[in-house]
Length: 220
Length: 302
Ligand SMILES: Nc1ncnc2c1ncn2[C@@H]1O[C@H](COP(=O)(O)OP(=O)(O)OP(=O)(O)O)[C@@H](O)[C@H]1O
Ligand SMILES: [Mg+2]
Image (cartoon, rainbow over all chains, first blue to last red; front, side, top):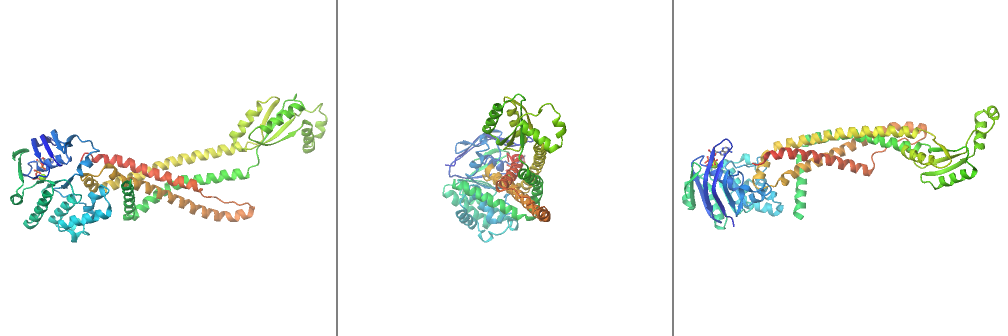
């Protein structure tokens, strides 16, 4: 039940640059999709449109049949709770501990604190950061920060995982482990959409590959 | 319902944590708000005490009801009965024209002149003790009795009540104006504090929104913070006044012993204290609300 449909979606940023032009795309529930393409192709823009972080200038974006582009501001938080978001620039909170960063999505939904703490530790354990739960994110390496971001994205068990370059800073070993993590999610029915340059990962996971070039789908 | 409650409890705990995290800044804020509130509140306390003193030490206000020259004894009796039945009258005493003349003679030493008069120029009168001391009540009573048949004139014996009343009214106006001005100050202080908090928590707010926080969830801790700082400022003001009164009453002690009357200023009563705290909390909340509306709106759409 996490179907994503884009119909002739265009996105022109203020300032006139067209990041996406007439993209149509259908991602079935439980599918695993890699979005690839050169830098500036529009991969991040595509993910942002799905998560209602940006609104399309033309066309429609449907998530579970709901038009995300015309969603009222009140509805957006509830839409976003369906997603696990891994940001290209991480967006970690540096004045909170690693553990508290992972707790944030649960706090937002008013999750029971004790059960939440258990889940947060489980998520940290999955990405191999449990021993750093009290550390500040600023003291983590680039790869560790990326894994922390993944832990935060999965802690509330989203039905759709949107990850923007989740293995960008990781060495091959960790990238492979994170890849396994995404495969696990895919296998339990989570829809996984990744924007990545990592062709090694793609070769291993054998996902559906979509290449964007200059804001248009070049290959699906 | 449970989760709503626990969400509020958590926001409250978060607010306290925030206050403790920056203890110096919080104390400073609370002191500023406290001082701003202490002024009108202190003024009010003094006023309330004056009012109490005036009530305790004022003589019973009296009205003289002079009857018409042609009023008969029956008319006088009728007026007396009517006075007994009138609400707001605690006592009434009849002074006949003869009695009044006697008093005049004996008290003033004008006996010779009075003896030379062809007749008694004085009217019969009722001396009425009123229940209320304030000018409005006395005026109403006076206006009413004047309308009665065979009543020529009603005289309110002293104007002190009116003077005190207008003085107290003036004081109340001053307190109100001062309170309004300083309420603005309080709102402005919280507005600015919250603005700074929002600025320093930009990232947190942005991330929380990105991963599904509602506006309510984001606003709640700021609103709580405003209300709590306001209430804490109110409490600080209360304590300041309490301290000032303790010192002042200490100074009054020898004076009080000298005159043999208990001179002492009282603090706000329980109800007024609670009202003052609530008022401060509401103002703080309002300042925070304005700030949140102004500064969180700017984030949307992300
Ligand atoms: N907020 C923005 N305002 C204006 N232009 C933007 C904005 N975000 C992206 N763009 C432009 O849109 C185009 C697509 O950007 P996008 O971030 O989607 O690329 P990308 O495929 O994710 O690239 P990368 O691999 O470098 O992350 C780029 O040319 C970029 O300059
Ligand atoms: Mg990108």
